[in-house]
Amino acid sequence: ILRGSEARPHLKPYMASLQLDGQHVCGGFLIAEQWVLSAAHCTEETDGKLFQVLLGAHSLTEPEPHKRLYQVRAQFPHNGSNVHNNKDDLLLLQLEEKAELNSDVQVLPFQRENRDVAVDTVCEVAGWGTIDHSGKRPDKLQQLQLPVISRDVCNHRTRHDGTITENMMCTDSRRKDTCKGDSGGPLVCDGVAEGVVTAGSRVCGNYKKPAIYTRIAPYAEWIDSVMASADG
Ligand SMILES: NCc1cccc(Nc2n[nH]c3ncnc(Nc4cccc(O)c4)c23)c1
Image 1 (cartoon, rainbow, N blue to C red):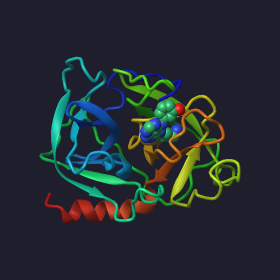
Image 2: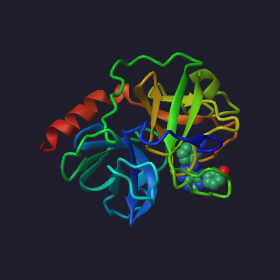
Image 3: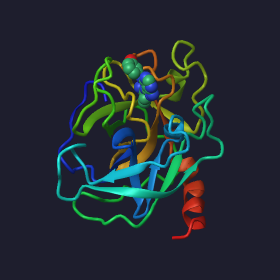
Image 4: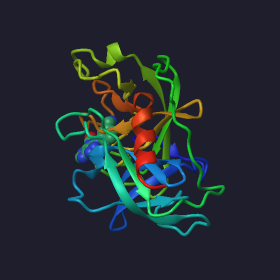
């Protein structure tokens, strides 16, 4: 998160840190007791290894009352996801066991009605991604409020040039923006997860490349079917 601020500790109890060998790789969020939603691109440099999921955290390193690292039983990238574009960039992670819910660990509802969030709506994004262009990583969860911009503006020739589908949405990226390591985190508008951070052009903080999110509503059936199919 570029030019955000430290989140109020444990006020986003749905936030997950997807980790490999104790290192934060991507964001994610709890959508059910045993399920975390994130971005498929997060598995690109993991050469088949399963993530570990940190829940209940504010600081990545300090001991905290309800902080706990969960093993992952299985990972389900959306079939349409691929390394060449941002399409269907969703990843479902089934935890080895149901997460213990408490004041610091809670499920976040996601939008099921497939209707665009109104332009100029101010939504919130959070993550442990890089906080400057040198790639400095924060220890504590960062947050940012960003306005939704229209798909037409986001698709302008000088912006994302027609690559933003109806299954994606954008927020303004002038100065304040998402960045490396924020992928997979939720875009929360009025308390509901509307989108999942995708890296897109990977550029951070450049107003010519608005931040891109995979809209969740179009994938509600996919999410329900994967959760129903896997035992539990
Ligand atoms: N703002 C969109 C967005 C959302 C999520 C992730 C991303 N970026 C990235 N995702 N993965 C990456 N691997 C390497 N570099 C990356 N961006 C980067 C890093 C340092 C300086 C800088 O200006 C940009 C990214 C970009």
